[in-house]
Amino acid sequence: MKMIQNMFAGTVLAAAGFFVAGVAHSSYRHYFRRYADEEDLRNKDGSVQEVVIVDDETKKSRRGKK
Image 1 (tube, one colour):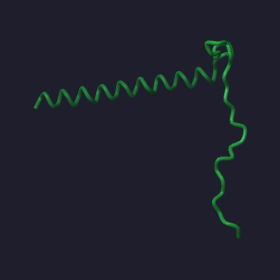
Image 2 (cartoon, helix red, strand yellow):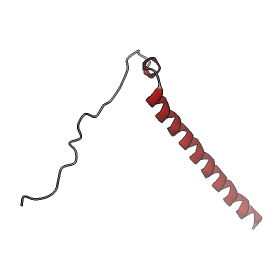
Image 3 (cartoon, helix red, strand yellow):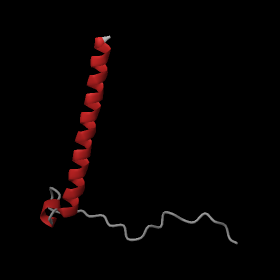
């Protein structure tokens, strides 16, 4: 019975550890991209990649004509 408890506790601790690591990585990427200088955002070839959505036309109204 103790072996099952240890295995369950190890699984829960591993899952919690991976979750915390994922949250930390995601938070770092978010804040780095938001507050980094332009020279820090350069790719290996020296170019800067930025994607800006100007207008979202993907959602159309599904209502019929009245």
